[in-house]
Structures are given as C-alpha cells and as structure tokens.
Length: 169
Image (cartoon, rainbow, N blue to C red):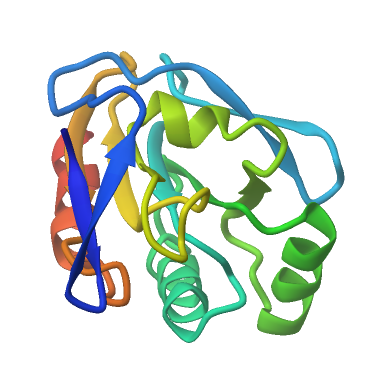
C-alpha cells in the first residue's frame, strides 16, 4: 500500500497503485468552467498530471505557479493540476495568480482521479484530499515518471518531472 507523510506522520493512500510502465487511467475531473477535463490515456501531447491537496495552501499555490512558468515554453506538454477545491475557488486562484499555461481541475465530485491514480489520502486530518503527486504520461498513454512526494507539505522534484517530459519527446 502506498503512503505519504503529513508533518512526519504516515498517511495511507487508497486507490489503484499505478506506476511507471503502466497505462495512465483515463479519468474525468471538473474544470473551472464546470466542463469535463479528461486526463490519462493516449493523446497528441505528453501529459503532466499533478495532484495537490488544495490550491488554498502556500505549497500547492507555489507548486502550481512554478509549473505554470516551467511549462510555458513546452508546447509538447498538456499540464493539468487537480485538487479537491471547488471549481469556483480554483477559478479565483487562477485569476489572481495569473495561471494561463496549464489547466486546473477539481476532483471533488467523486474523487475518481485520486482513486484511479492511487493518491487519495485515507488517514489524518487530510482524509479525502489528494496527495501531492506528479505523473508524466507519454503520447501512447504510458506513465513514464511518477513521484508521490514523501512529505505532503514539501514541493515535488520539478527538475526530474521536466526532464521526464523532455525524454518522453
């Protein structure tokens, strides 16, 4: 069973434990405009799928801003940040933070993305939120990079994710 940590305490993750070499599940989240946002599977572009607990935390906000800047020049990549925030709150965050280079979506409805990617936290005060994780999916729909951040309050390894995108070209 997969896990992460929250302030040094182990948090169990539930859902399908997928990894590098597995097919990326095709799942739907809700966009800031309330339209469906599909992630996973084969697509014309490499996918960067990022899950975070809530955009309303400093770490999640910083991570989303950083990836927004990092993927600005990567026209080979489709980037989606998924949280449990309501679409209205996500839209407000994007507007106030100048998020224009990636898609922000919500998994609040049925937690299908978090379950399909094995990142739904099941313990602690964060139960029901997504763990901080990064997946890179190549054009064929295969996961070529996965990071479940060891401590949910820490940022991911940006350089490793960006390198995986470049290698997936």
